[in-house]
Image (tube, rainbow, N blue to C red; front, side, top):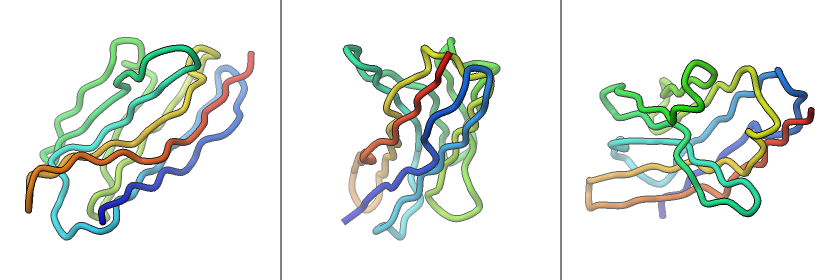
Length: 118
């Protein structure tokens, strides 16, 4: 069974930084894409950033210039470096990954809470 495990969330003051990590286990194949989503209280889950196996990245407009997504050297790991954090970045951040081999599979992590205090 493929699983994603996130880490790195916590409490930080506005203007500070955090680095989220996500690692997949249970698959010998490289994920086609990995990404981060977030869900604030009372709001829908939204894309933060994604990265393909080829290194192409995509960011939500509000995160451009502040957040950086990258894939680790270990297979199926992804990081999210978050700088200049704002109180409105407070949310549960979820890791997501998609595979096409051996069959299509989309997996979500359990989420990690990021709280930005003003």
